[in-house]
Length: 306
Ligand SMILES: [Zn+2]
Image 1 (cartoon, rainbow, N blue to C red):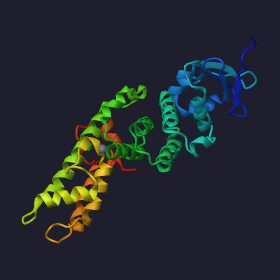
Image 2: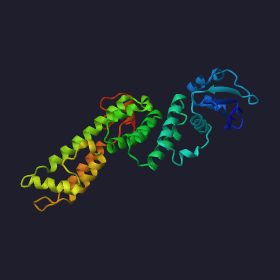
Image 3: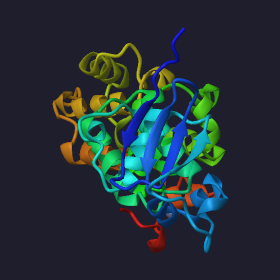
Image 4: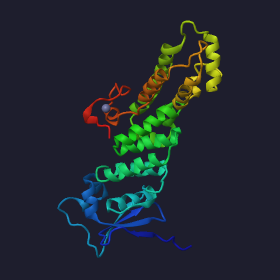
């Protein structure tokens, strides 16, 4: 049987190193040792002694091969293209969160986070901008990618979506292979912040409206459930995301009390505002520092809110 043909990608016009990636049929990436060395001292050391400071690299006439059998050819190719200042178009046109996470794991493995910080910023925020999905796995992948790529804005946005859009326990993310790449403090922070947002919502509504003097409470609750299309009030928290609760609260100003007055729009607006602030995502620096106050809104200037 004929051997399967090895695919070769010329990433640099004058390569002096060939990265042989994956298992047969492998992919050969023709790259520049100077670019790799410049990107990360750690990755240079991992790639072999020929990259060490003061030693001669291989010649462009006979590039030396380095085998990386455990890596994914497509992901390492993407990373090498970016390190060589080449655009990888799939990340502009809608790569999945899973693809971005795999890239993040590879960039972190070769310690190229700083070298690729700007590209990572564009990729992560572009994905969050392009897709509004709120499911646990997709936003979990985005959260871990933002954590590995040290992007505080994408981390805050993706954790905010997890807090407001998901009803399942965050600990179910631990079943995913990629969960090992993030601090458990992030999962703790998500769970604590969601619980606090739910508790605050119910407390704020109760203190503003329920029960009021001279209001037939039972009739009021019946009207309320009918207006927001739930069977009980408060609705069961484990089966309603905070986004759903928010949509209910926004509808409440259509409800007449039995005193012939509508609920105050201004009071409802303040309840909605408080809930939205409670659902602000997590601070990446606080999570990385294992800050026990990760649930509170971070005011540390050095942590930034980029
Ligand atoms: Zn912080």
